[in-house]
Length: 349
Ligand code: 8ID
Ligand code: ZN
Image (cartoon, rainbow, N blue to C red; front, side, top):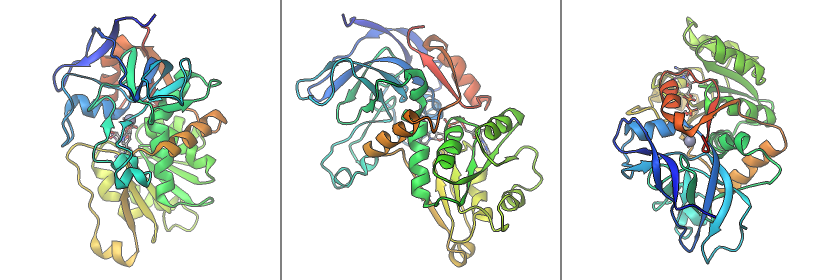
């Protein structure tokens, strides 16, 4: 009972708008599964893809989306470790070669032949999506598919970034862009990992959200007279946080973080504002022993762990559900910076 046609949101030209239309249901190859996507989170990456923000071409036309949660409905002949009827998720890393020196050491996101969902292969803004069986997220049957969707990119990414930061239980982490999709989950993963959080974002709604998720401090960058001073003041000894997670979609914070990170602290770049550069004074970076690094999604084990935090009730994205047909409206809100938490689209509407 797999249909031959399905509803999808298709990007036909850079800048959009996305086109809600019927397209054929794809067939899985030998090492692939077909997932009946029930819900998909909408990540800011999907908006970057729509706008052609990055120095990496998308396929064209393409179906975006990479936080897709659903049910396996077909599998290729080589697939034997996932069953029809199992819950599974389409994440950003749709597939990788599994044999290069990066894949062999579980840095699958660094694979030069990585397939990217909703970017180089069609993603989860459709009712039926394909994923390489080795990479689709295994989702336990006892979780809500709409609630788990944002974990598949936002949750996974911030969980990995916190691990990459090297911050230890009891230490402070500043989360820049804390009221957005990634940020609202970063606050919760950090808390669950025993870290104190200093949230930075703009506006009262995001401030209330950050506090309600357990963040000890909120700094409103639209109101603060001195963000650097305020961040340092929020740490017990005034020396600044041990780690900074840069999740914002603007360049300013990427230039500013080295001014408030603690000596020997780490700055982890995650957000991907178009055309942006990281900048830090060499002198301070050296004599204060600052680490500056990037973090890019996570591997299959990180995925399983990130989902397990969710299953145990330690983290949950604050989300709103709308129909897939309303995707362009979600993009418009995202562009305006008006989304606190995440939007999840229901592919049946
Ligand atoms: O693997 C990765 N590295 C990865 C994975 C997933 C997403 C990277 N990303 C990237 C996305 O492509 C995007 O560039 O992370 C970025 C954040 O994605 P998101 O959380 O889905 O975006 P959002 O919900 O729009 O949240 C961004 C927040 O940043 C705030 C905004 O108010 C918003 O809440 N923000 C901005 I814009 N400027 C800020 C500033 N100067 C700021 N917060 C603090 N200070
Ligand atoms: Zn994403």
